[in-house]
View 1 (tube, rainbow, N blue to C red):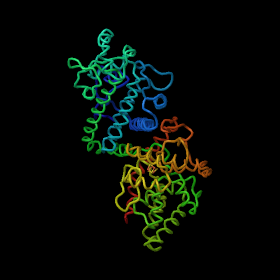
View 2 (view 1 turned 135 degrees about the horizontal axis):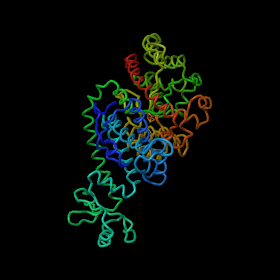
View 3 (view 1 turned 90 degrees about the vertical axis):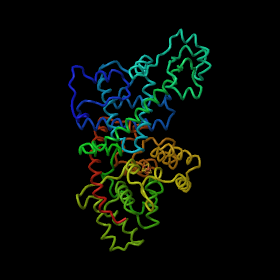
Length: 517
Ligand code: SF4
């Protein structure tokens, strides 16, 4: 893969200059050729990192001790530049610092391509990248911070000890973060006032002769604002070049997959077939189904029908929890014929599509249940539809009523709605899990409705068979499963990526068999 469509021949490797500092504003795109495998691995691993940033940012106070500790762990695990190390020093094991910085750089640009496509994706990407940047900037040694500022044309100089002594009183009076005792220990930066209008407007800094004197804590705010603005503009520019990128048939499916990315188990392998009886579904839907599936089940029972999107989402979920083809046919048939569809019509119009879903017709492909990202980001429900993610697609007032109906406590509802407001839909669902299962910490990172089901069964102790059969690698590995990727897990994620990529094409094909609405 050549990012520019050409290689640059130069006596001095431009990358050496680019990776001279542990942190960058990602101003220059990568210039080198990389393989598609590396392209995919880098992208998947950065996505894991950003997902951890998102989860930690909601679960803990940003930059608190535990937040930093967990993020440190993730950095080390995924081989991203962790703590500033000098130059190309080879670590005892694993890639060198240079290789880590290269991965940081390239992976950022790949995700830019994937996440510039819609407003929602751009917003999510910017938020996580800014949080990541904050953590990394904060972690830099003061000398490296200054180097970073100068390297990026932010000519802010730390004032000398002498200057600080002269201005001490003014600095203390104008900044609420420093006192007379601590002023000596703080670095102050002299910055043109137009670069710090927010701080000037709120009278948080000392202003003299066109310059403001900003304590270290506040310089982070300015750098972050700058980073956010640059990234936002860059994403808008990247979006304009999308038609060209989409014309590359190797890249388009990869990028689409990344923006709908799900990095875990795909729940397509039916090791647990037949472990669930049809009689159990009603009670399981109340106890162990995530809200999206509970809603679909309820709508099906009430209306004796589900439209196309609902049948796809719910049908594949049921298959993933262990319904056999025979059970699925019986389940859908018995429900539909209670409504307006007679047995004959069902056999003609619907049975084929259910067999197709199980890989018994057409291309005979074993279809994959939808991940949360797919449910959240694609095919939003319209009137009369019941599919989608209630945390993403329901009106907050309706969601509130539904949660009240399901006996979620008022304080729990407030917490969920707060997460929804911040667009953390999967975390809101995870909170719903904790509240309805009476556990303090779900201890997994939710990415898939079928994962919700398995975890629920584990907690309720009713999934012993399912537990043995279904792989749940995330649970034993601590709070943020995305963080815990052994080499084997990474390999699996990469495999899943390509499998799901195929599946997205195939699912579209499958869609055509369901067009009766
Ligand atoms: Fe379903 Fe995932 Fe939404 Fe939960 S977050 S309701 S599992 S789509």
